[in-house]
Picture: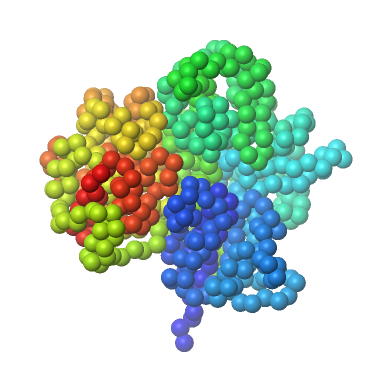
Length: 596
């Protein structure tokens, strides 16, 4: 009799909540809740859990990741179950459980938030062993006794030594607290109740972590702390400002700390700029504070100083672990400017780097599933490096279904080819692209993308206006892999398939593709080969054949403040709500036109 498959669902509970379904160690799908509910950063991935039923009617394990335990997840009436175990039971995915002991199929991994980031990056890196560097906002919280006082501290930066099958050993952890105290570096810290038997270095500090400092600047520029990508877009408009105090402290510790006089933490949510101490920061002579030079200069400072600090942290991790294979995850892993900086800063260190493309909290669902699988099976087979994130659920439409969905929005469906789409783009039309499985994580990589002509000098302002985005937000480019080195400096990388680096363009290139080159001469690049994404590759190749340019302007298929589109209905509805007319479905050779 054939052995039954091992089904594991990983659950990420917090913001960027999501679900990963794994079968015998392979990802069946992974999706963030916001894609289904259409609410940005949505938590509580209940809609995502329903997707499991499309693939299996049972689970062996439900591995749940967050920064707080299931006790905080809310209880179902009468049964008293947490909402996730309860929903899984009601759906028939796990068995009834009447014992007061924890459900044997449910694993609460809340005490290991950073470890879930590390698990994901390690098992997708292709390395047999690695050291994981996690730089995050506020991970798991720990109750501690300090000088007889009960305080709460949160993970901000962590270092792990990782090896197969399931060893993710803590080497260092920086814990931040709101309580005022004198920072102290403690060696051989007892892992206590949350990691029995472990001994590792801990820095307990009342200062903002590196990401928290970035969040403080983000809020000071007028956005939610979670919108740090906007600060990254603004930073090249700034310049060094001698009036500013350092964001990073100069200290004798082996890991970085920040200046508490400038950035004051509000763990676990955000941090604030102490503008009262520095009066020159209080200028408010414009409705749009991003036009103020002090905001631009502060964005510049936090980017330059934090990326340098993380490069130093990586060097410390290598020294601490004795391993030169480095994997990066946690929220700061999405900083594509910093990722490019590491390639130069670490050039002479002999370090091999893997940056996890799903570094946000949604990725911890996959991290939980991976570590659960390896704990259970002790599988030592090293995985191939993961160079794509096309992990969304599978969607399939008949021609009649396409027509019916289009008719809801009075849209027209016609037959079309790649050449037709290229012609529309060269006539300066925006064309959206919908195909295959959606991308997991925040990057659009040709399956849920907005395409445009990168040679249009006014392209950046035009598309930002259509998407309702800020003027300073840059755009990405998707380029044929074989042409990338003629156009961009990848600093020794062969390719960049997951768009995790903002790279310098080669001399003379900026004027050729002005719509996608940022003010600092960089572009967030996705290299595309035919094996990774055949339809997208063929579109870009057709564009090159017509224009001589092997690059397409690529940005995420959504409007400002909205999640990426997930379904065909989402896609057509988005066009119905903006000034974009065209949607291309290359799998079906169909073009949908929405007249606004």
